[in-house]
Image 1 (cartoon, rainbow, N blue to C red):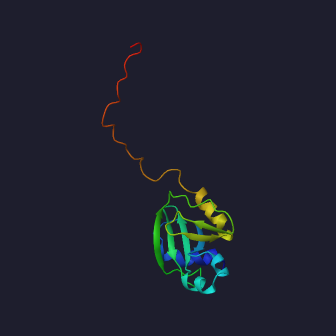
Image 2: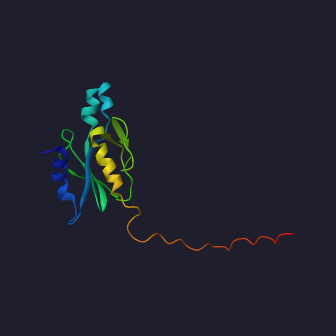
Image 3: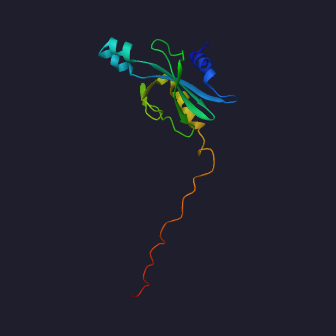
Length: 144
């Protein structure tokens, strides 16, 4: 079974009935570049995350320290109208989903797919703006 399929299968209990999954990708709390400084920092401070993008919302699910495919709970729920990307580089740092999340290049196509399927406007009617409190100032007629 592929990694994305495993992540989706573990995330299914956290989905609402009838929710359609549009993209699934993984990330982690700390960049792999910390490995150059110390393995202990990476081992004890890193946590994996699974991001599930549906037609209604974006879920950020908590993973474990050792496995990207295991899900332990929901960390954040983000409105579907939020743009996740655009990703770039080997380890892209995503800040639009709450806590910074480092996403490896192998998941960049999933981030792009999620952004392509993003609704043009949030669901529901556009916000109503109140009328101005004061009428616009009257300008003097020309020639004065």
